[in-house]
Length: 386
Image 1 (tube, helix red, strand yellow):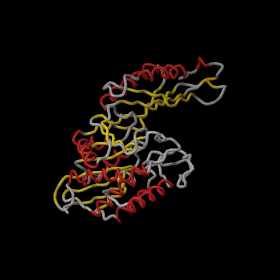
Image 2 (cartoon, helix red, strand yellow):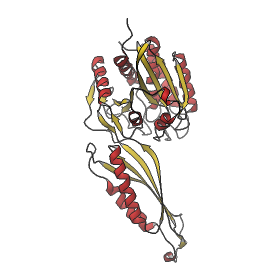
Image 3 (tube, helix red, strand yellow):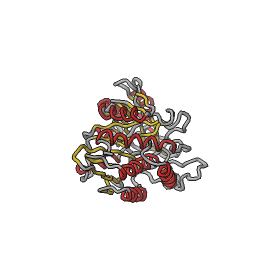
């Protein structure tokens, strides 16, 4: 028996389609957050927190007795990508789309809110967190840095992400490293311009850039799953202005660094910085960091709870042999002390990839995902007595 009736699932599906029509990107989720808050109030939340770490919203559902706090988290933001589809509910916002499935994640938690309205846990409390700015890696940190976070801080934290390429509805579980740490490294090189007829009178960053464009990707090491795995991906290069009469003074490189653990990321950063300094010579160097994601390290106890619930529900699951190479800022909640795990729910073996312009969250996931998340709450806090 599902936690929600087919009619409720149909209502949630309609809501997801409308959220899909109106995506808001990281840092701009005001209207989405307001809409979510209204639904949470209608579901009987005992307390709401608004504007957490930006536009975040959290709702509290309390049990009658004392017990741990279980947090379920989803994301509010879409992507700055133009959707290409013929869906009747395709994005109505030019250049923006819910092309990662966060619309489906939000509706899943609203489904849990409806289940909690009907069946409160006998003890403890449940926090449903709708987090802003996941796509930039800034949202989870901003929420945790919010001065109201101590009122919310959980003992357990769970979230899920849909995963194209895996069977629809299959629950992926992995204890330990689950998603890579990553960060964007912006390298600004400044020299001295000169007439193109007298380049020797200037200081061009061209040679340094050429050397770094070859050397930085060579920092890659090993394969995903190995502790020393590292990846350094060149993503952008710019040299001077598009002219013919000027030997350039300025250059810019952008590189994404990626590792399986936070400790390995610290080492990779030092390797990259050393490499830049060694090639810069007399050039002035400025380094800026963007889209900083900590590794997701899944807690074994929380992962075991999710596995037990999947077994109880008869849902297919598999123990993932390797972590994901893509990043997720959910790892911050484990860093903050919660027993946290991210679940990886298959969205179909032939489903378009995340961030593809034709991606869409599969509505067929909703009943099973809501059952799984609500089942985790019941496993930890106890089912409501009959």
